[in-house]
Image (cartoon, rainbow over all chains, first blue to last red; front, top):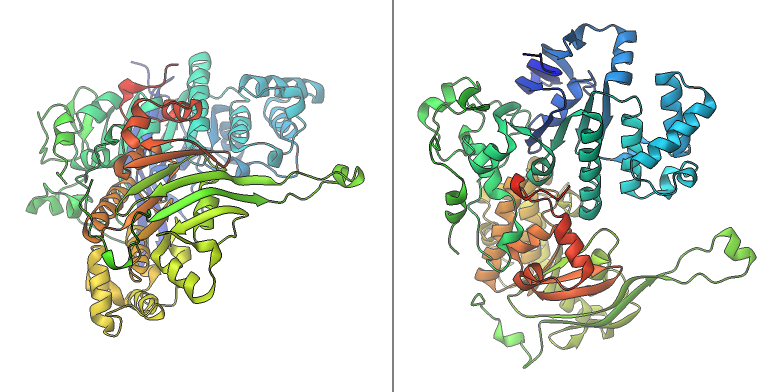
Length: 340
Length: 286
């Protein structure tokens, strides 16, 4: 069997706090196969964005990777020196963020920013870089690329800026794209276009992707596999279809039952909502991090280690209680909504 | 429909709780250099363009639309946070544009707004209890004389414990803060809550709690809600009727179920098509 393209092992990310280190990511294992799209879904503070950033060793200050391994194509990313890290960031992975305006230089024309990437990363000459940049703009679906090449970021819509970011991120044909909430700031119609564009790039280039989102809808549209994060841990992972229809972990179930759905129209009634809120960084919860909000929590839940265990083909859950084992499809859960 | 508790005393026969008629708001655009040289006028931008709708007591009306569609401008015009340029906004038949001073204040009391960012709408130096009590006192609400009981009732309505009263906004979670914003709106006994993206910034598990809360409040207090959101699925969860806005106009309106099942306008159809369904079997056609 070929090794995975990206392998994260026992990743731990810490932030300095007033009394000792605060642990934001608490031992995450994750693998992305070549050409595979893996989703990281979770609520605020779950550690999904940090996990994504750790792949490029770009954890924001004052946070740091305290332990764990990141391997890309067999090479240890944690051990790379400055120059090789730069090469790795330039050629092997591309990254797009939530706010495309924030990632582009407002006083440079967008074409020049793409061309710069090509000159620095691919050693292209001026004219070649210009031509290639126009071709890239065309490929990411920007109409009239010659004219848009000369536009400044503020002259473009959010969706177009995100397309420019995708053009820059894919300029050196990376084998892995890191996408951190790439459509969250966009209108729903633009979001659909960007998701289609990412799917198309994947089909054409065989590019793998790690997609971070709080929105299970976005994850479901784009991913093969998904890892559900909560309180710094991956609580469940599996094929996206399995996770949606037959989630094992009580948190995954509660999360999916909370997702608003169009089908609710005309049938206005209360949802079986999860009480409380996701844990803050400063909260230290012994044992299972979800236990305080979990309706199936038992006394020994405070003593368990958060460890993913196999519960089905390519399906792992960190809940040893397994209240939904063999419960089958989640359709029953929808019916269990509290009657108004 | 829910059996709403209607405050009969203030009701005028036949009038809707809220009636908006041909509302218009224009923003003047600055002339660029070319226009100034050519001495050309620039047509103002119509952020709200001839919008009419009505809302009854205890009803939840969703307003949907993309960014720039005029949803928020419309909401702000309703309570005259910004001054409309034309049309009428009537509360129980009384035109809000025709009044000022104490009468306007009374009309505004009856329509309270809840914003997306509760952190920005709460005074960071005031305890939750003090903020809630102040609202009730300013509008001279019955029961406001007894601060503890007044605050406790409001916190109860939004399903928070009394302990919250002594906290400051920064000590609360996002969901708790938004509950406090809603409690502050309820402090003045409004008949209508205008919720402008009030659940959009919250985590989905907390969002579901707040959506339930709006339904509870409608049932317990008979309050009507104008529920503004860019997410159609969120509107589907709470709204009886929906109005879809695009470029300042309402392009389609009707019972939520009907509009979603048989959208007539092309823009509504585009919004529905673009909705990312959480079921992977319902992916967009590639």
